[in-house]
Length: 382
Image 1: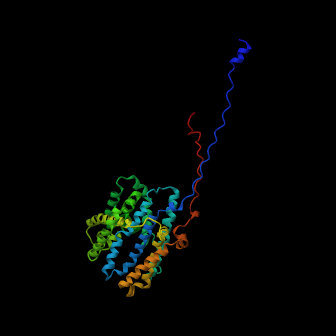
Image 2: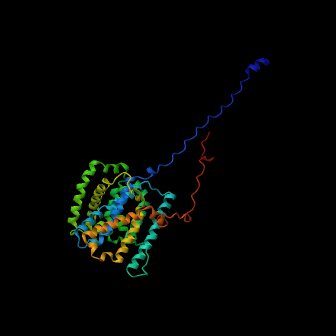
Image 3: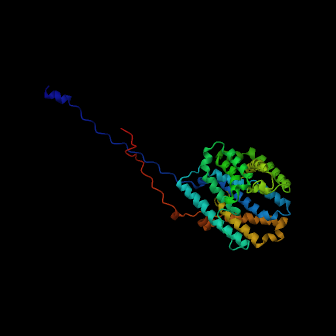
């Protein structure tokens, strides 16, 4: 073979590798729209619910001798806390036990519970003339039960996402609690368990459920249903113990046979859910002057209780004028104005140290995420 044939047989040089195509730059993330971060409907609902809570507490001393005040009291107590708890469950539906969420649960629920339970206990001792009244974190007093209940409900949220038939199961637990007087007062477990079905129901609701109750087909019937509930409450005042609506005692502790606790658990759950739906049906969905106050309802809830108990200590209800029809209207208006002020951004800034402390010193720093490069052991074979 001659040299010329070798030259012809030599393979052509490999083409130079093409330069990689430029990677298109990713678009910059859009700035978050503050109006989409919060839903005006839920903020409105939380604000209106906390106003009803404050009104109900202001009516409690007015019930003696006034059947109308007692009827309004029973009517509001039938749904104001269930509505509040339902919303809490709805916003806890995706809660898991990630470290950052556990941290938020501790700083936003447990720490405020410790602080306010201490303050409420000192107030209780001072009001009773016992300056050495013990502070017990296992025996919530007055409003602090909601914080310990919220902690228990939220910490068990992953369980309610994996069990079958979660709402019937929660109702069964509540019914068993209602006829079990041996549960005791530690951590107010009666209320924790008896209010549990409302939290579980909220945790399994979707946005379309709230849109459904706000349709015209629901809003119109909500008016006569609410009116009928008011009439029934007026009829039930001399015939029914208001303690059923507190959900803090067993049937036996209310002087009823054990089986009535089971019956009342299901009856009150159905009644409360219907009235809560009527309440949601008329909650406005647009931004109003009080919408921003919905972010501070827990502030209003815990702080207004101090003023309510302070008014009892000061003897305001010992006077005659609050027990007149005009006086009751004035007391109601004062309660609404005060709790509105306590939900304001100014009050939130002042008391954030107690309600939403940062407490970075108490937690380990979050671990930095490792680069998403597969290790040699897990890399796919070529």
